[in-house]
Length: 484
Image 1 (cartoon, rainbow, N blue to C red):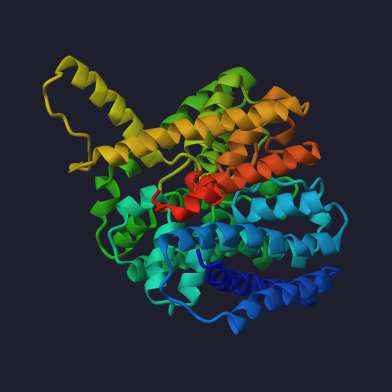
Image 2: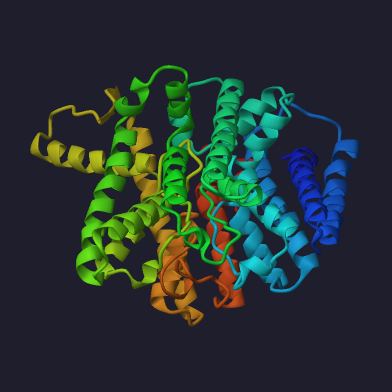
């Protein structure tokens, strides 16, 4: 393991972060707010830490899989650490723990917040907060590769290490082409949503902040009431469309834009993803209407927005879901666990794995009925190797195990069971709001200090898809071949 090479590549991530800090400082100067100096100090510190390795460590393009994995994980950790600097230097509601939590929540596109009053935060800092979403949404390393396409064979290895294993299995493009597709779709969706929100009546700053959060499926708003602040069905419907699009494998979106519209509905995963959201919206609408005595129009409006928001791991809200009937809250919990498709910016278990889990269940029933038959598992007419199915099923089990363990730790710290469980589900899936005090109109400020650190680690584990996290923090594994 060549740690000097790892440090050199992590430095590229710091340069990206410093560039957005300088941009945020420019926003602060434009609005004349008090976050200019905290952002400038943070930008210079991050820039220096990014430049030193590039100056003193020789370049190397022949990195190993183990080094690439460590580069990816350390890039996330160091980005979160330096990303907390503007918050710490600004002060106010940001203790070091709170700043770390907010930074991790931003970069992992979780959207959980410790802020009790978002609207008193200056615009420069709010822009940085939104920028962490946009950097983390596509993936820090993929962002670096898109901006600095000169890393040779390292580009391929880093790309494979950063991308979700499920997305990797479904992404059949060469690494350089795949990076172009991801970056192009990501930027295109962002610009299109900004324009749409401007036409719907948002000002430019709000449109940028909410577009960054939507396309990254993050959920940070610059309003205390989130999207409910605008009380605009038009704005909500625009965001619903872009949340749904951001939850679909970007390669499929690229195919549609390139003229292959059939790719959209030919995908079993996409059909399930869209169908599940529609079905859940209908069922929850009926439940909310009958139980909470809400009129039909608003029942559909609130159910559609919040279920799709949670189901894409975005986390925006236009209603208080903590007062929903228990039945509808259970639906929210399921979608917070599942989330959207691999190859998108969504978190959670992913619809791909849920589909494979279901097909594996049906396969096992058929195999028990016909022990001697050869019954392959197929998706879209293609046979899925047993190794891929087994990894997916195992991942679901490990994922739920982490949720149980973190919930247990939080309850040991005195956190209410509902808040501990829903908060863990929300942070593990990078969803944002849970239920109760950590719900859509609440925040995580009341969680004990140690609990915030636990949930921060859970966010990173969810974003890194668990295995990478455990491999890197098990040093004896570094001497072995790393595959995940």
